[in-house]
Image (cartoon, rainbow, N blue to C red):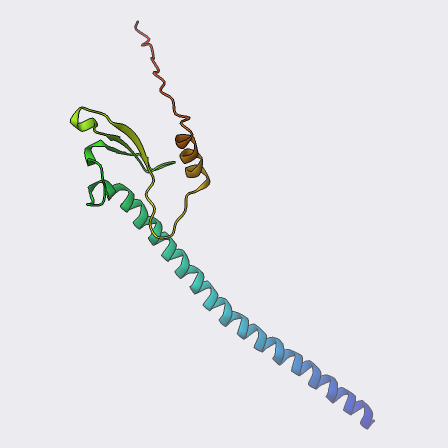
Length: 137
């Protein structure tokens, strides 16, 4: 009979140990998840802030001292390039058309931006005049 009680006590201790271990693991996981969730949220907020600052900067860049063109010649597109500058147009003497991509920090070109850059550098740029007739004519 004492072997049965010893076996029952050992089994009870094992179940109790497993239960305490699972409870501790659950508490540890909950604390880890809370910290991890906060870190993800902070990262998302920082990235969103950086994107917003970048978008504002793209629109204000023609009015900053480092912009080497007349702000009146710049047109904001946003995507796939930020600006198109018609250099000299305001003076009545167009010298060139310049595509401008504004980057802050260590940001690189996206795939689409790189494609536009490659097409411009390969001189794969055309002029098309599209005439639309009016219904009354």
